[in-house]
Length: 173
Image (tube, rainbow, N blue to C red; front, side, top):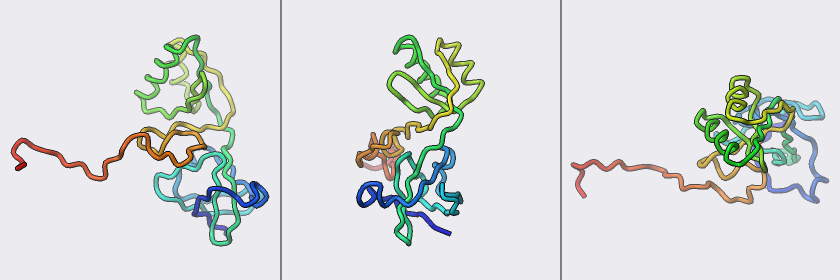
């Protein structure tokens, strides 16, 4: 079984050296340990560092040096649009308040299909349309940059403290 464990920046000669595709929904692209099948039918084991999210277009390799392209599988989602930016912002706020993963697009939000959230968003004035689509949610402020697959090594959007010292009034200075 092929074991994939390393992200690579690019395949030699662009896509000429991409041996196969690993098509996965977002839920599986979040896992650090995974057994799956390539589009060729070959079984693979994926081992990544905890917290790694595989994004559409990422390239993986293992000991045999074959390059495998990650593809975001279409999955049940809702595309959320609004008549104005203020209403869309309110929808984003309420989704974030519920810790709901959301993809931010140009004038829309995309979330996993959830009937309760659909009802809430419609109540806020949004148009919610069911779509079978690739889901690429934002990774969050501490999740290694923005959620799009063109990160260009930007890193986190905010500094991440390695250790935080709590100062108490009685502590010596």
